[in-house]
Image 1 (cartoon, one colour):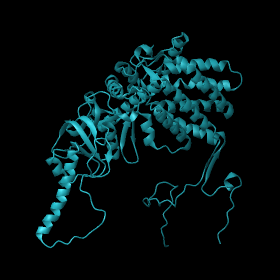
Image 2 (tube, rainbow, N blue to C red):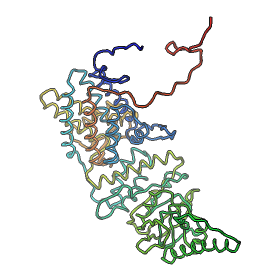
Image 3 (cartoon, one colour):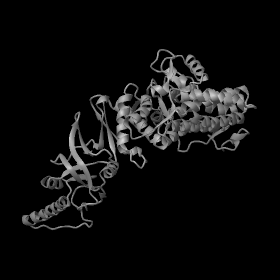
Image 4 (tube, rainbow, N blue to C red):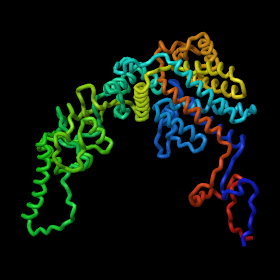
Length: 558
């Protein structure tokens, strides 16, 4: 009979075996803060134009070399529950404004780091949270006063380029002018008068070879595919889109055919050929001269397509088909039949061309205001092109944010120092213990100029004191000069380093919420993980080094 071992009294008595629990300041709160600090320190070095790249290898062994916080987090698969909350906040930022994920991480990490100091000084968690909430509210009130300019005309290419430049700069420092111009062309060409802009309308096509500066913008779509048949270019194309394979229809019912002689066999296959020809002929007679299919193209069908001078393009994914339908204004037909004029799409030029040594099919619109534009990225390696794609993504999102709210605030740490200055003086005027938390909230803003400085190899403290003295003299738009020598400052409004207002607004809001949520936790209770017993570990060599490793059970006979 097994001996009943009583459990120790207390909390663990209630839980199943294998459950863990941590409670109190020391175990729960500080442990959570430590995890979040680690995470934010990882991405802090990737902040700004001189930010370092991270090399992340995900669970599928795919390599990422990037300083884009959203990508790093997506591939890291953070396990710690508290750090996950901050990751969620930065994902929310990604969905809401599409840029500023690193801002959320760094800010939330700084808030928690300073909260730890306050808690160790003896403040209670609720006082810290109260102070943070007040300070956050105050920061969002002050932020509109920091606005230094706003976008007047989003159809003006030069103006849009200057706004997108800052977002691209933090990803691709050195190529920002060239890329910002490309992205602006892509965005402006599809920005309708009605004013609603869809991020998905700017596509990216990556083609190896050449250098970044060989990238171009096309109005229409580019696919890395070859044309199936002999026809390789069509002007003024009428496009029939099929979501089924370009093949003869297979009958629903199964049947057996008994063929007695060769003549019958000839007639049988002839019937099939005639049917196929009739279908292709019907498509041609409907006026179509390009066929796009989502499935395989049968040899017989291709033969007739060539005979009737139809260009055939095969696309692999449903996404591509849908986007193409949107671009050319076609309807995807589910079976092989002649399309009506309404169901056919129209495109000025469809042609097969070679970019580098890659064959691409281009659906090009001659007029500017197409529904979709494509940025063709060239680069020497896949990693480089992926990183440029992220920069394009950020630039397009910046444009979308400006469509929603045209206000801009100064970048390069100017807004953050101005907020820190004003919130500190607000904290001085507050009675009660939460003034300490309000001042720490202001101090957390200093993380940004400090990160920009340290990543550029400049002493952070010198820069911050310089910025403060400039801001106390009333120069709101003074920020860190990255190109300058040492801790130099400059007027960032003149330099054109501007951030969209909404990026900062949501960033501050989400980071504060995430930090407060983490601080509110005072107990962590983890149930035993589901799943059966783990696979046994591989037995090491019998001659083991560590005492803590289990000895091998040899049957030794004396």
